[in-house]
Image: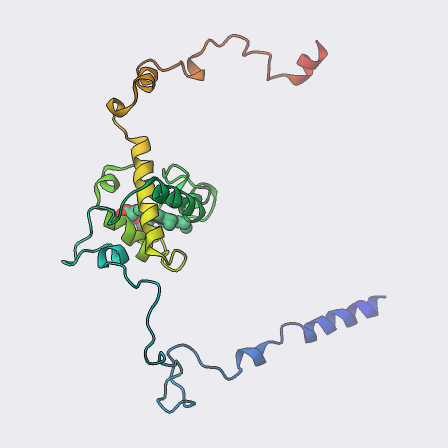
Length: 218
Ligand code: HEC
């Protein structure tokens, strides 16, 4: 019995992990030199006449977030519709919520209990981020910012990135709207808020949830 176990251990040592031949196989790495093709490059040039398809017909501000003078655009360079915001919400919840949180306060699950980042996840609810041009947020999504990685590969359509910008502006407004902009019935609730649970009378607090065995005995 023991012998066969040893044999098994030896066999797994010999059989496992032998992938050096695949590491060392002849292959072309991107942008490396190669003597296989006459021009000495491993990467092949585009076929003559190739056109990029994804960004065709989009203006520079839509593609890059910058205007023709090289300045960040102040406002989203397209009509901000309910559909655009809804699309942005969907994309935001897929790509951003886990770090930035559902309301953009920087308290997503990753920020709460995931990796420790050199720089904490930003909250969108600061004066600086409220005042920065829309093009800045687009640029952060496209190219990354500090410790945050870029998203242009995951969100290749610039329209989707602008949709997220629109949704972030919506989130900011949701946490920073002037009370005067509320309809009358909501305004009344803000002026006379119901008491918080902590302000309610503490009656019945003792003996209820604290001692289950006593509660069960009665
Ligand atoms: C892996 C976690 C993570 C994800 C996912 C993430 N972010 Fe961030 N984000 C960060 C961190 C960390 C910072 C702060 C970076 C710094 O200051 O170095 C940040 C900063 C920002 C800022 C503030 C930039 C500034 O000027 O201060 C914006 C805006 C932002 N993120 C938008 C987004 C959007 C939109 C998405 C989704 C498309 C997203 N982030 C996804 C971690 C993340």
